[in-house]
Image 1 (cartoon, rainbow over the protein chains, first blue to last red):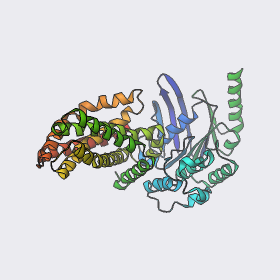
Image 2: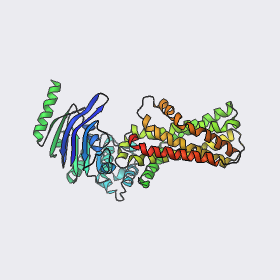
Image 3: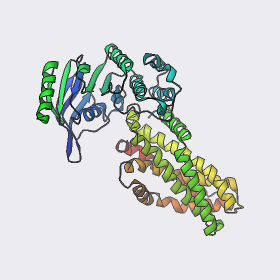
Image 4: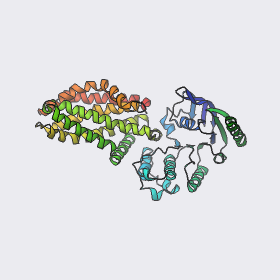
Amino acid sequence: MIICEKVSKRFGEKFAVRDVSFRFDKSLAVLGYNGAGKSTLAKLIAGILKPSSGRIEVFGKDPYKCVEVRRKIGIITHNPMLYRELTVEENLRFFANLFRIEEWDWILDELNLRDKSNKRVLELSRGYLQRVAIARAMISNPHLLILDEAFSSLDLEGREILRKMIRNFEGSILLSTHDLEEAKFCRKFLVLHNGEAAYFGESYDEAVGILRAHKEGSEG
Amino acid sequence: MRPLAFLELTKKDLKVEVRSKSSINQMVLFAIASAFIFSLSVDAEKFFGQILMIVVLFSSILSCSATVVREFELETVDGLKHSMSSREIIAGKIVSNSLIVFFLVLIITPVCYALFNLSGDFFLLLISLLISSLPISTTVTLLSPLSAFAKGREMLLPAMLFPIIFPVFIPSFKLLGFSYAGIFDFISAMFLLSYTGLIFSLSLILSEHLF
């Protein structure tokens, strides 16, 4: 169970996330346009950022304070979190060693990266870089997978591979996106607008309606 | 803390450093250039201990802070935080930075020995400089995350560093001076190693606030 209670995150005077509350077990789609606070919320849940106020609980513990919980979380963001000077294999081996995982190279086949394994990360295209980032996040068999705009730079094949991995994933998923089609499979939906929760519930149509209304409101 | 985890980080850092060569090249060139200038301008044989410490200190600031700041700038530290505790990260960084500074000392000592026209015990001098460099690399690594996002980080790091590193100077000069005469100053060496241990322990305690 992932619980957020009145969570806020402030950078200086500006609130990136304000008084957001939700809880989910299987899957949550966080919807919102650019600047809504999706990435900040993803980083808060992942334990990368410390909330300014409120309480976050992932599998019963605070992810910011507990490394054991963070080790159960796989996160994919727009930033691949990889070492550019190392090869794909060296990067993945490094993370596998940190997790003490000996059998890890199945992930190369899963993401069709075998022929790129000896290439340095800085030589890869954006799409392949994202695939390696997915491999990094999945290598530890996480219990919670956080995907923050994970589909954005993938090509068609990459998108299909990621969709398949998500379908087969047995843990919890938090999908942060502005692509409404990608979010359809989720069981719960959270709409963020200017850092605040505009909707939290189980209806996809209602979430999309509120998201569109906010867009028209801000444009009109 | 898992010893293997922080050694993995050390191994990775050294590999990245060897591949990129950015910090090592910068550090070695700076060290050799400063040693050369000092050898022309002051009585280098008399002040070699002080000169060596200045060269090692500023070269360490350049290289040790770069390896930490790079993790923050590329946000790779977020990936590390998902697989290691803050203690393991800081411990790994201290070990890798100390090894990088050791590498510099191994290069700069024979260069200075030749440039300053020294005739003392070379190996004792080398060991003394290695010991003297330990508190410097440890302290720079501790302070680097604090200055990583500061606007004037190049100025801020030395400003924060000097008050903390100040107690190290006198024992280092003594250790280097005695070693040149062929005597190993055990008390100064123990002080420097203890100071390193103190800063290392402080780094572990403060690690949650650093990474």
